[in-house]
Image (cartoon, rainbow, N blue to C red):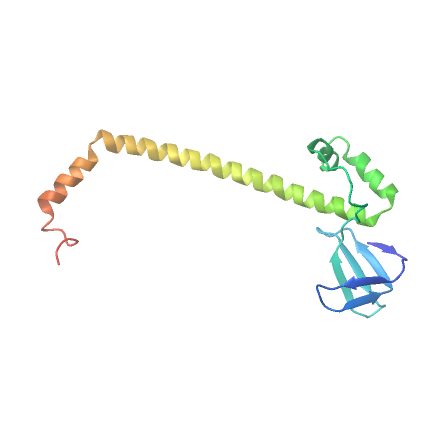
Length: 159
């Protein structure tokens, strides 16, 4: 946890009244980093998601190639982590943590969708083979003849 001796923070807690908190800290170890604010020891701790501050309206979009720099386990991951620590901006570190968490989730969901698509393809193929076998036995004609011959005996058609 990073504790910053900064000016009092005006923290809006989801549309409720604003809370002026002179003590703030950052929880960067959470899955989704948080900004924690309080009036002192034993007081209520207010929290909100920690996001990086914008540098203005005009900025360059991050390209897919640039996203590789932010992806965990890539060639330059350690260098990017080192740069984030030396930049000493907890909000930037928190935003990169958000990116890492959501990127991992996207990869996990994509793998799950891929496995489901493969399973769907296998089941459809098996169903089509079964349909071919049923067609080869002329199943529809057999069923129709049986219904025509025995409709008066079937409990479904008697009233």
